[in-house]
Length: 378
Image (cartoon, rainbow, N blue to C red; front, top):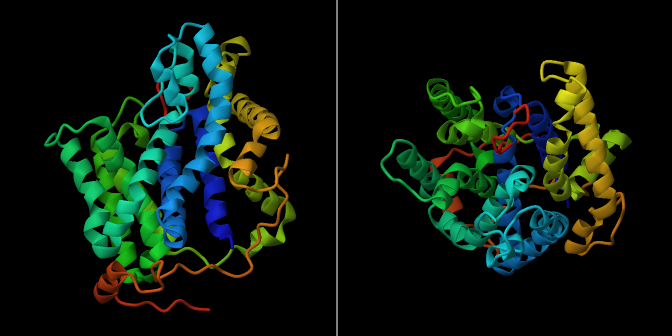
């Protein structure tokens, strides 16, 4: 049973990431912090899988994640080996990128998006323990990544990169846990909106007072990114509608959202190589980043090329999910009813953490850049 609102959020996040990587418009990261939204949605799905299947959900999630990476590696790793990448045991990291796999000069830029899979793998592996802690102490567990990030950013704790990544994005993943548990939905407006506003103000102030090399780009500001994104997620998930009827009435829009969701990983993995490949057009054709027509053409070209690759290899995502392979996903994705967040653990008992939150939170009635040599997170 699919939640089409969450599908719509994922669709918008993917489109925003691609457009940002073509245009480099820093404002897009503030308008829609796509990467944090994607991690929050993934965290919600991971919590649902763990509640349904227990620790076996980890293996299933990895099974759905890795084959699309292996297809990408089968094309680009030999190409990099032929153009200067040294053959070493670290090349095997392309099979399971628990840390950054090796790349040569052009590959490091074209495949810079691998960081997302690296973080995703860490978060999936940590989720059984994190969910156990979350059910018993939801608020301390939810706050922990943000506390860690603050200590890192103010210089108290010079953490290794993996800990910093947990501080930056694992908070969004845990907000996905809270969404699945129904915590965000039960926050009253008197709590949710002031909290979101406070996070946005503090995060925005940090961004303004600590600009990066690309100005007010969230990718250059870890603490500002985490706080601003948390405010955004609280609103878009905490006030998520029961459905999106207009989407279901539009056959084209509904199909487009379905295709992007069924091919999300393929689109994400393959778009950056095409963004990099089309960059020389800026000099050859004269499409500057101030030329709206040139930018629009480049965006359309990237989506067209990604669409072609998706037709060729996107079916791998169907195989990984144990669905019937399709060139263009056409299966019905309409929900049979509005999915409601579960308040119960895998054994049908109320979660201890949820009981604590209910006591603390009043119940609510619910009526019914330009592309450069920098590595851009998205």
